Image 1 (cartoon, one colour):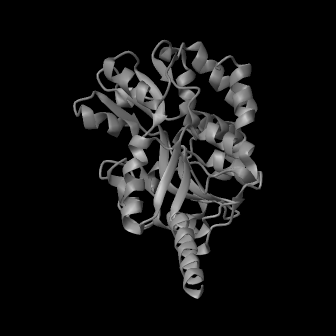
Image 2 (cartoon, rainbow, N blue to C red):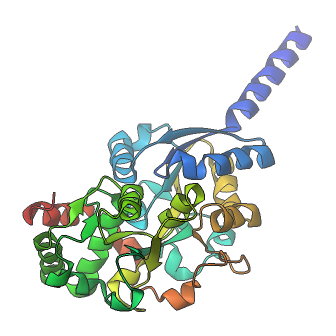
Image 3 (cartoon, one colour):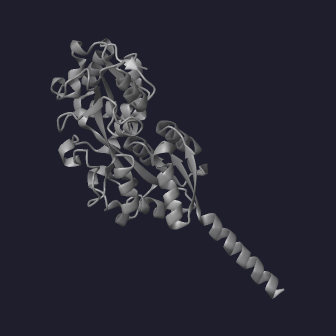
Length: 327
């Protein structure tokens, strides 16, 4: 009887331990970009990762709808706005101080509920055969000039573009953001489904310039090193120089908190930060990890002074895009 009881207890402990080593991650990052990184995490820690991939805004909405019934332990978001929305809704828990302290304060939650793991700069990508770098405006606001009519591309449904518009609203005000959207629209900007499609269109010479995140160019050049496309960074402090983050947060009701904390901490260790720098050409956010050789440093990019957690007003941005007829 005692032996049977002991065996039952051991099996129960073993089952619980196995369950604790499976982590459910909702990822707004594309599988092609981060799938290999998540496999590395499993190889290093032995913790299996069950991933649900999707668009960041939709996953954030799902998490809000699921509430305390969500199976997710970690949210790996494409931008800070979605993380801020979940934080404001009380769906996240505080991260360990040791994890937060690895990243500059401007790239983490002011309440400690999410942390940036890679930086993503907004740029204007352009066709080098059709445009001279010297002819590009210093400010994103300059692209409303009529000389850009019929030459631009954008992706209004893309989460990173919408975060940029939110930043524009915060930095320049609602009226200025509305005027910019109307100006780009008046210039007949072509609509694409995402950043990658814009870079591809630039390579074909279909458009002369487009609004994207900086790293999509490098992904495209892995397939075609001769692609006649380059990135232009707006002047430091300009809304067009926004550096948003991809970040992670632990759900308030996660039953796998220990594994979730390990995941969050590992994303800021050298292996993961080097992966972002060298494999995806994003900006590492931990001091001492080198930026990719052909990128300007974050200090030179000069992202505008903005609390990234305030990029959570997606509804206001979508309403503005709808009111102006962009969506």
